[in-house]
Length: 172
Image (cartoon, rainbow, N blue to C red; front, side, top):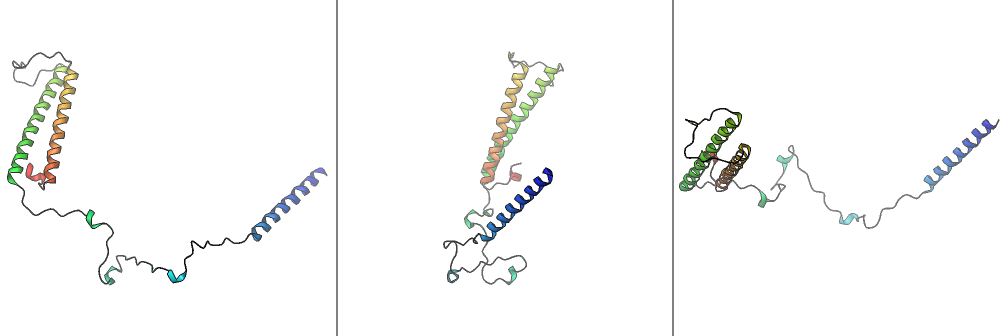
């Protein structure tokens, strides 16, 4: 008996709460639009027309393109590039690339020396070089830093030439 009584009480409470919730929802007034958000119909603006690829052919007059015309890329200039400038840049590039090649050879020699293999130079003895007290790894890191510096100079020359209208094919 107590069990059936507790079920009856729970069902009664449930029914009471659900009925109260429904009455609150139905008695709530609908939200009103604020007077600031509503614009009178007399001041309604004409909606802008959005053109698609299918109906752009029926457009009359000029068609506006999205973007600022000031920020549009400029077409390449048709003026001829200065031949002296191109020759000068080419000469600088050849010099820098020769220095990079020399550093690459030195790096190969140092790597072979550290592995115990013979040097790539003709006799293996460099009479015009002095004895280095620095470890091989330190010498290799210094050479790699020099190589990176030279490569950045090469990139800077290419960028400068490109900005002046010289194509990279003219410099090679």
